Length: 101
Image (cartoon, rainbow, N blue to C red; front, side, top):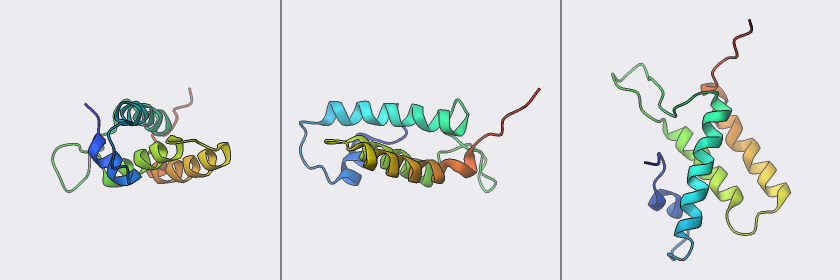
């Protein structure tokens, strides 16, 4: 199950038709994998101090939607790089540190 729903992504994209639903879902799945690699983790859930159970922070969801937006339609490499960098900066505080042995 996706962290970002198809409806959430389509709302972010301002997409009102259903023709691209399969593509958008694939972009969501890819963006979530990208986010986990960027965060150096196997889950998007973060243990927040004010709640007992881990959850996915809204800014992590926003970074995923930005990444989907960057790749949706006819992606221009310059646009993809720009928005991917924005999304990566949003994820930066959640990045697990590398352990050097």
